[in-house]
Length: 84
Image 1 (cartoon, helix red, strand yellow):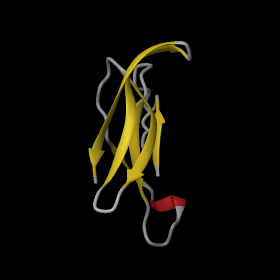
Image 2 (cartoon, rainbow, N blue to C red):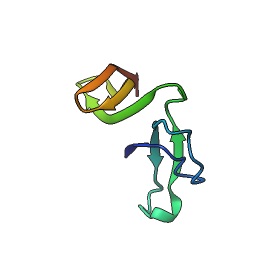
Image 3 (cartoon, helix red, strand yellow):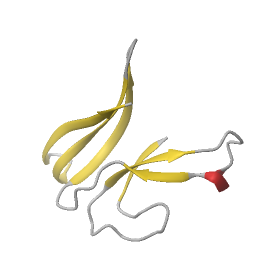
Image 4 (cartoon, rainbow, N blue to C red):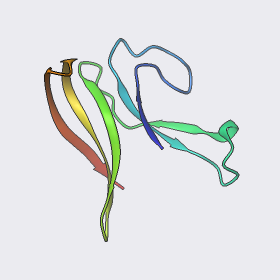
C-alpha cells in the first residue's frame, strides 16, 4: 500500500502543509499492528500526491505527481517515481 499524507503516519507529526508519499510494509500476518511506514519522497517545498503502482513484465514502479498544486484547475506537476 502507498499513500500520500500531510502528516507522518508513524508519528502523526505534521509535514508543513505539503504531502509526502509513504509506503506501508505489513507483516505476513496482515495485521495493522505491524505496519511500518517508509517515506519515499522528501521534498518539503512541493506537493507529492496521487501515488500508484505500475507494473510490467520485468519491472514495477511506484509513481506519483510532484509539484505545485493550488486547485484541481491550477497546478504544475511532474510525474516522478522509483523502480521496485
